[in-house]
Amino acid sequence: MHHFVYKNRVLHAEDVPVPRIAADVGTPFYCYSTATLTRHYKVFKAGLDGLDADICFAVKANGNLAVLKILADLGAGADVVSGGELQLALHAGMAAEKIVFSGVAKTDEELRLALNSNIGQINVESEAELRALSAIASSMNKTVRIALRVNPDVDAGSHDKISTGRKTDKFGVDWTLAPALYRLARDLPGLNPAGVAVHIGSQITDLAPFEAAFLRVRDLVLILRGEGFDITHLDLGGGLGVPYSHHGASPPSPGEYGEMVRRTVGDLGCKLAFEPGRVIAGNAGILVAMVIFVKETPERRFVIVDAGMNDLIRPAMYGAHHDIIPVNEAPLHEGLTPADVVGPVCETGDRFAQDCMLPPMASNDLMSLLTAGAYGAVMASTYNARPLIPEVLVDGNRFAVIRRRATFEEMIALEQAPKWSG
Image (cartoon, rainbow, N blue to C red; front, side):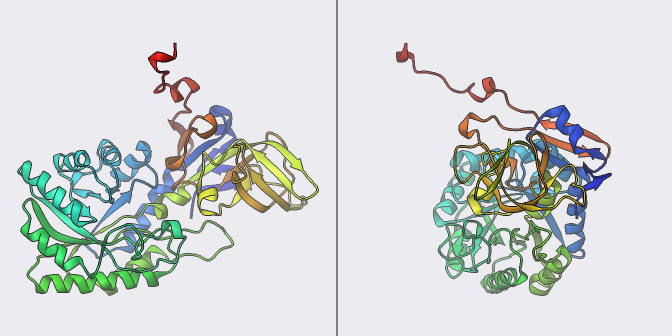
């Protein structure tokens, strides 16, 4: 469910007409719904009712400070994968003890930042990182709770580029090698190996891969406890999918997901952490674009909009689908015909949809790409010297720009010619 609906044939974000926002901030822009973010967080939390669990929002899904603050005020922590994301989470007011730091390439500087910030847990992904963290922690006279991120060799069944739990993926340590690394961690100073972590991928639409991974984690916990380890924390990652199309199959609900968690690891007595991102933020955002031209060829109808792949890379990068609708609902008598919705970037791959069924469109019409609240603005670039676009937050009948459109001068402010160029 989301709060982007037609009212009097005009798309609204909660109670704000989308054309009003477009007139104020220009196009293209991202728009987020406070009500949807809040509802999705609460629904996910309710799905885990009865479990001792922290919800650590995956900052990589949407790193806007205003979005993070909404979630922080609801009680969310953060899953971060860089020093920058760690600082974002803290700046947004997320409690340090609810921050989990993941990622395969944490630098010494990032590990020191994590230790100085007294975050709740660092997920270690290799023996080399284990030794580096031990050296840094002991030099700072600190002891940090760690979890080894275990690679359970489970195929999440999602896109190849967002599957992270197979033995050929770069993430985590092979689950069969994990006991030996836990023994090493127990012997190294500065480390408290009290957790196990797993994350098998993103946009997962079937509970079976989760269940297979969690059962392997369960087996590992029992093995480690048999060796005297006091395993008190499990980080079960994120990855629960969302519907990107009204015509596709619906992923499992948070309630169904929570029941599977109870069935697989609920009796282990561990404090649990979850890292949802897309399932909270995905349907809480849209990308609004304006039609520049409609181009008819003997083969295709091209609806050319002012948003490009630099603004939303998912369709070009993953072949991802986003439902696309006109902001002004077409009259029922206007027939739908196929169109390719494309952007201005000088790449053939700058295409948001192929054979999208749309009514007649004309220059200056507004269109909305749905389910754009996750992995949208955070993955944007300035390719083709196109400035980053605004992000807008709606709350009831009010809206605010929470990241303004960058100017050309700001975009090039970090660049300079070498002194020898004259």
